[in-house]
Length: 58
Image (tube, rainbow, N blue to C red; front, side, top):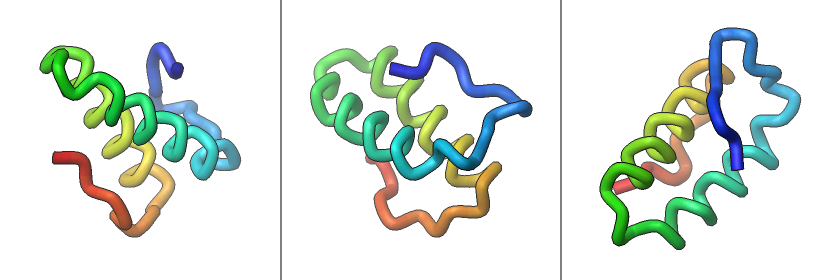
C-alpha cells in the first residue's frame, strides 16, 4: 500500500503501483474513506504520469 503520493512520485513505478492500488480498492469497497483515498491516489498517478484511464474507479 502506498501511504502518500506526492509531486516527486516516480512514474517508473506507475504500472505496478496502479495495479496494486486498483486491487486494494476492490478489497475496500465497504470503507468510503479508504476508497476515496485510493481513488485519489490512482487518479493522481494516472494524471501525473499521463496514463490513459483504462480503469476509472467508481
